[in-house]
Figure 1 (tube, rainbow, N blue to C red):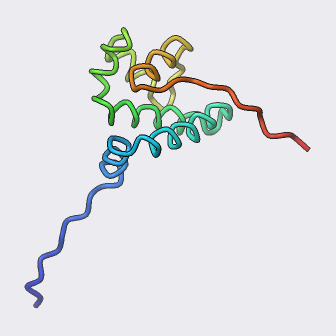
Figure 2 (cartoon, rainbow, N blue to C red):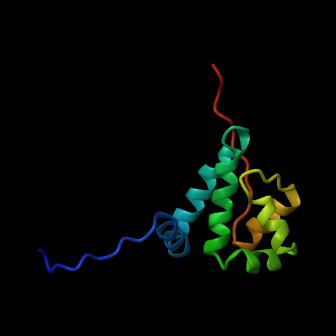
Length: 110
């Protein structure tokens, strides 16, 4: 029987939040890629949950909701897998986490 102690692993979600908290470039790229998913109704939940992860990593949903000027419950609903945030809510959350929305050309369709 081994007497070696194993280091407990960190759950993926917690590791992601820690990385989003400490690496701004990672957070920007994570959110940029996830927001591209908002264009596809079949993948929209992934984009909303990524925005929720960024909000959690940058102070938590309650703090972000307060800074964005919306209720915590409304933010939870907007950033749920079935959420449908208004542009105002999306912009307010992005602003609260120190980011902004930008536009890029869509890939050309063949």
